[in-house]
Image (cartoon, rainbow, N blue to C red; front, top):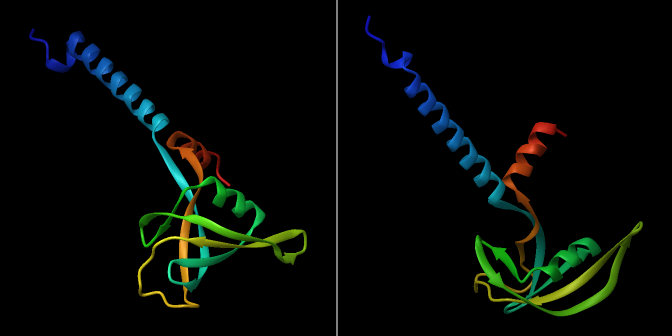
Length: 136
């Protein structure tokens, strides 16, 4: 009696080893790659290439940690010009006024509002899967 292809042990062993190798590669890639969590900030234009942000102390730490911000999906280098201490207090939370300088389009005029994003946290993709698995 002739054996079929799926009955041969060498094919089954080869298929199992191939699947195991692919799973190992998959786990390594989801462990290696990282995704960022962004925080959206509201900025008010003061004059050309100069904006003011009113941010909390936690956001201020993130702002000082980063070198770049994102405006209209473009990565832009910025420079902090001035910081005013605790402009507004809301309960225990203090808010600061930070003046930053970066190049943006000429379409924004004085007192226009723009939305910028900064990188807040970094997550490995495997950690994202773990958060989804655990739930809220």
